[in-house]
Image (cartoon, rainbow, N blue to C red; front, side, top):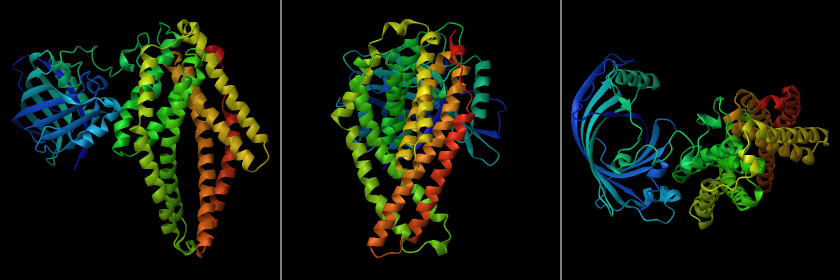
Amino acid sequence: MSATVDETEIKYEAPPGTTVPRLGKLPSVAAASGPEEQLLEAEYYDTNDMRLIRNGVTLRRRRGGSDPGWHLKLPAGGKTRREIRMPLGRGRQVPARLAGLVRGYTRDEALRPVARISTRRQVLTLVDSAGSSLAEIAADDVSAQSLGEETVISHWAEVEVELTGGGPRLLRAADAQLRRDGLQPSARTAKLERALGWTAGDGPAQDGPAHGGPALDGQQPAANGQAGRHDAPASAGDVVLAYLREHATRLGSLDPLVRADEPDSVHQMRVTTRRLRSTLQTFGEIIPRSGTGGILSELKWLGEVLGAARDAEVLASRLAENLRTIPPELVLGPAQARVQGHFAPIQAAARKNVLAALDSARYFALRDALDGLLADPPLSADAARPAGRVLPAAAHRTYRRTGRRIRRAGHTPPGRPQELAFHEARKAAKRARYAGEAVSLAIGKDARRFTKHMKKIQSVLGDHQDAVVARDVDRELGISAHLAGENAFTFGLLYEREDQRAARLRAKALRTWKQIPRPRFSHWSR
């Protein structure tokens, strides 16, 4: 049995002999409890080439403290990591569940002990007026021994602030006070990095491009692949590679969450796969298609597998919700049971296919190919030119393609051909949006505004596609109900609702496109 928690914390370098800081008045803190002393003994596991820690993942078996057991920590964005816990058990063999969750990193490499870390910890608990825990302040005296062909023995002290119920405001206030007291945040996110003797640049790149690739000149990618403009121009290759690295890293971090069946993880992994594929397609003049054709086809395969699972999940939820909005007197026959009976085997099969794909040699080969592409990208001559002089043209092409497809859809006679034409327009708008995200790393406000507009039209077109697909499922369920001798009235009602919704969204899409200001790509150059 396992449990999952999100852990938000900041570590600080500290001189030897540091005691737990007695922080002053902090937001919402009414009192402090402790300090309590704990003795922690942990054994860390990884592959011979440290594939876990190099991707910001740690796996340990720890005794002592308030939560002994196996702990798998996964990056979850910012200062937060997702921790999956399992009981200690009787042996030191990594539990099969945890080993399976990290297989996207380890592939078929064995996990072995790589370090032992002993910690003498003093913990001060900050509580609110109701006595609920808000945060823990810990002073750690740490002794570590790396394991392997060479042994490194080390000793250090650190201070850690972890939220247990408080919010970001409390963490910021504690950080400000500790900095005033002379402590500085550690460059390392895990004790294992220190035990291995790593400096900040040796381990995983937590805040910049992954896999140790070049960051933009003075810039770091922000959420959704956007960052501010900087005086020193980045090259076109730097910008495209930074975006690809960001999402290749995200693909890896989502892998264990999909395996663990975390909410929304399949959707996020599918979107990440689409971003990677779209970027390689859009910027073929920077990374020539001759070097990425195999990756493109495999990303398409992975996206289709994930898409089947995501679509089944969304449709089941949509139809169940639509049924709940119908007055009870209009729900004739066992409509709810028919919806559940229809989607249960589809969802189960889709989930099975996703897990089979993630454990396949084909998927591991794709991940290896992505790593290889980013480690040694086959860049064109244009990649060395300033991003502002090269990338706007690629974004402009995606914009023109979107416009052509929307106009074509608007002139297509109503019916299935028009619905398919709007679907093609949606795919074009999505590629334009992702192109805007990528170039925003270097170009800034103009590109972010373009991305916002493309996202807006994509959203309307996406809602249209969802309505069309749901309508077709309503028809299929109505036919099944009729053939089974049930009253199909309710599914006919649902069909009509979705059909009308799709018609309204087609009109809205045409209006939305006309209202979007025409981007002036010439202003993007610098």
